[in-house]
Image (tube, rainbow, N blue to C red):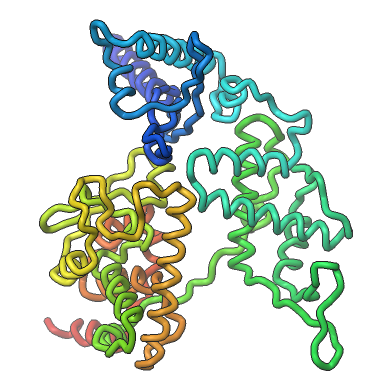
Length: 470
């Protein structure tokens, strides 16, 4: 019995050590393939991975002739990694300096307890915290810069809008543009006042601060935001709080967010608006005679999204030839591929319709890395790609609204309706919620349930009638 206890303790210690090893931060020298430069080189980066999350940090090496190297071609990088006899001295020097950088990074990681990306960045870059660590605006600026460096431009934009909304609120209440905002000043009541300000109507101000007038001389008003939008603005602030607490910059006791049970501030949730079309309306839209080529193209890509598991337009734009098989697509979602290291690929079975759309609009470049559709170009910067995806999404939304309105479907339609329609009709057709969740690449079935618009009355009646079919 005693031996069994020793064995059990040994097993627990072993499992603990394995888990600690998994959680330990690791480093790797990589090339940033998302930011190819005009000279065909890729930036050198140190990638640090911890708890299944990764961050990258720029690297710059100075050679003996005082030239600086911060990027390499793919071929040169492979040569640097694999030492060869009679290789150029430059490769040997770069390899040695990269090895030193990685060793220094690992030493920093050993010293950090607990490990945080913020603390590592400060040590590795030599940039210490500002003398004002409780300043929310500073934390926003730091986070936005890091997101931009990691090419998470959409998320960076969300944080920027959140920051601007906080400053606008303070300006409206104090009459002065704020320079600082401290975590300790953001209380439960402060957040409630902010929410009420954001949803209320406001004077429509000119750039000079005066109010625009209506034809009858009365002051113009701007409609307040929805509480859904307020929630979108406040989630980055909550994340900023969590990061500051994790980095031991503020006390957890001042955290104002929570739930009704602990009587803290609850961020407004989005209203569940049904965005799924009925089978009848889908048929109308599909069979509608498009009066312009633009409307026809928009419908093609809208239904391509629909038949490909409600595939996001950004993911469609980023599809590459290497993602295609004869009967399926396999890809990682652009939305989550930088934030989740262990996400499984999304597998989409190609219908005959989807294959026809691919052939109709396909990029003639057959190389594996080439984009399937000629929407993006491999020479585009990350900012250019983002603008092109936004532009293509807007194009589809504008044109599909015109077509849908002309046949009496709905003028509120957008690309999101394709995703919600696929989820709803798949479940109504007998697919399990687990199958749909996997098809949408959701990590939580609760998220998938939010996409389901429910069953039609005729379907409900058929189900109830079927209960008597013994």
